[in-house]
Amino acid sequence: MINMATPEPPPTPGGKIIYKELLQLLQQALAKDPFEKIMHDHIMDRVKFGFEKYGVYLESNNGRDASIDAIQECIDLCMYVGQMVAEEEGDKWEIQLLWLKTLYLLADLEHYKSKH
Image (cartoon, rainbow, N blue to C red):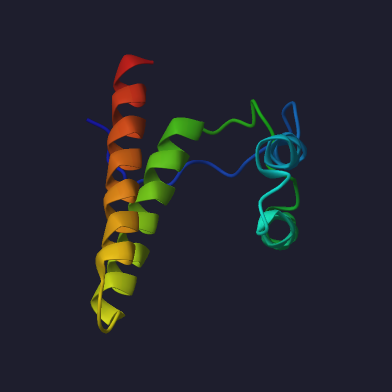
């Protein structure tokens, strides 16, 4: 079993620049979504942050195990959304549904990792 507290090595230049692929997918899948522009801007904020932190853009074949990175980040996401649930006042059904979706995403990532 992999220890999810063990960090992956620093990324190295590899192949495709991932944010470009992500922005294409975002535009194709959510072009009519009123939040598409906001999501685009947020993605670019994180792209810039990541470049400043690592000195490279996230690329394929970068020396890291992307499935481990995804599982670790999804665990963090589950924790943050759990914090949102704990801090929400009033009717929590909407945020609790989002929390449940993060757990299903984590389960899907774990299943994928176990098969590959």
